[in-house]
Image (cartoon, rainbow, N blue to C red; front, side, top):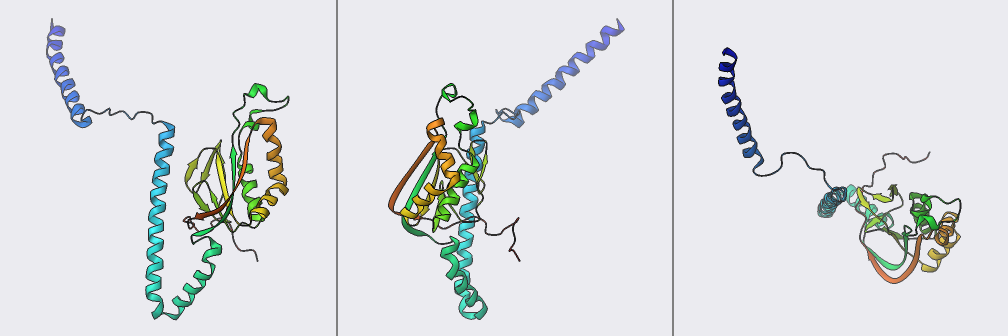
Length: 241
C-alpha cells in the first residue's frame, strides 16, 4: 500500500510537468518544427550564390564610392592626382572597366551518353568536363590575344582561379553547373586559331566523338562585358625577383 500511495502523488506531478513542457514547446515553435530539417543541396547552393551576388554588388558600390571620392579630392592632392592617373591608365588592361567588342564563345558540356556505349577501356571520367578542360580553354584564349574574358556570368582576369568541385565550377565564391561558357573578346580569327593549336584543347576535342562531350565555338560581332568585381590582392603569389 505505501508504494501505491507514492505513485498516487507521482503520476499527477509527472503529468503537470509534461504539460508544462508541451506548452513551452508550442509557444517557442509558434507552429513550426523546432528540429532543423535537412535542406536540399540545390537550395543551399542557390542561397549561397544569392548571398555572394549580393556581396559582390555591395563591393561594386563601395568601389564606385572610392573612385568618386578619389576624383573629388584629387585636385587638392598632387600625389592622389598622380595615383589616379596611373590607375586610370591601367584600368582597361586590368579589367576594371566595361568593354565592348567582338567575342568568341566556347561552350563545354558533360556527355549525356549511356556509359555502356563507351568504347573499351573507357571510364566515367570521360563523360564530364573537368577543371583542366575549362582551364585549357581559358589559357588558350588568353594566349590567343584575348583582351577581356567572361566565365559564365562573371568577368575574369588573368589572375582569376578556375576550380572545379566534382562536375561543378567554383568561381569567386559562386557555384555553377555545366554547360560551362567561356567568352573571350579579341580578334576572332586569332582566338579560334589559338584554340585549334592548343594541345590541351585538342585533347578535350578528341573525347568529343569518343564520349559525347559538348564542344561548341561561336563568334559574335558585338558584346559588352561588365567590369571585373572580384578581389585584386594576391594571397599566394608574389612578384619574382
